[in-house]
Length: 397
Ligand SMILES: *Cc1c(COP(=O)(O)O)cnc(C)c1O
Image 1 (cartoon, rainbow, N blue to C red):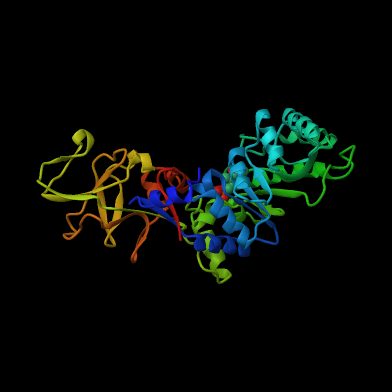
Image 2 (cartoon, rainbow, N blue to C red; image 1 turned 90 degrees about the vertical axis):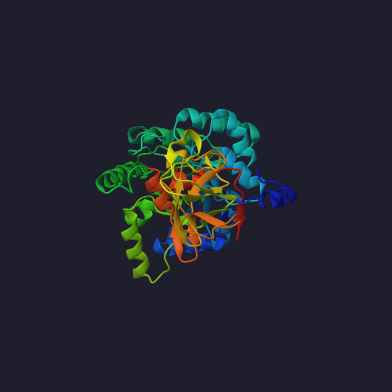
């Protein structure tokens, strides 16, 4: 997944790249740490750190100081281990029985939701003579993974019986912490609290199989910013580490907290740029790109950019996108192709091949945000960031 240095330098010669500002990443993590209470932090670096590169981001997070890393799937945990990362890593999405060997071999922790999973992990761990750390997930309303609150007591007893399973955490996931209405989140948190009461002595026939701290957690970015009670003793920020927010609801909340503590705002970590490959002067009435759906209504200068939907620039953004050239916004025109797209540079009379164009991020004093693109594409910033394709080199500043 990470090319050898010689390949990397050739890949980096591509005109279309994303720049990753690891200083901004470190700043964001430090800022979040000053905003939360005295709790542990799990930096969520799933999906290749939301497209920013899991290994460099995990390393930057470790430099600043985190207690845990969170990944979505076991393969992402293995990638971190194979790149020398020794911090605790939680596989948030859980594992299949055929992945338990890797879990043990790479000393990863997993979320756990069922007795069947517990049995599969424990028996393989016993064979290997190892202990596996698990975090029990409680489904309080996400309806995705986890044990239902009614079944929590039984699962807990069941897991406690396996001496090769170490219960290191109990957690839930918030479904709506970034939605306007806070009530669904309050209901989830109160259900989680009631579930945790079953941990109290007396409800269990045997003591919990816990060595070291028991992490109780629920907060993603929206949770930790908006519902302080969701922080428990560990928080799991993801999107905010990359300088974006889950939804506009969080913007005033974050601004208020940042100002109250005299902190600098979060900074975007990724900047997507390319260079014009050709500029043509085309007559009024000319159709451009596939399907000829866009017909220019004046004599125009049309610039070709070497990036397209194969790079993660959604085709649904066709004719609904602006890019920055010379610090000015220009319109994307015509259907976005697999490897290219077109922009109208008529207003920039000296625009020429080789010149920088920015899809999102800063150019001079101008900026196009990931949030703006998300609105245009009718999606969320997460999807814009994760979509940036594998063939777009990441350049670390
Ligand atoms: C993705 C994820 C997070 C991080 O969420 P953000 O909204 O990006 O902060 C936290 N916990 C779990 C279980 C996740 O899947």
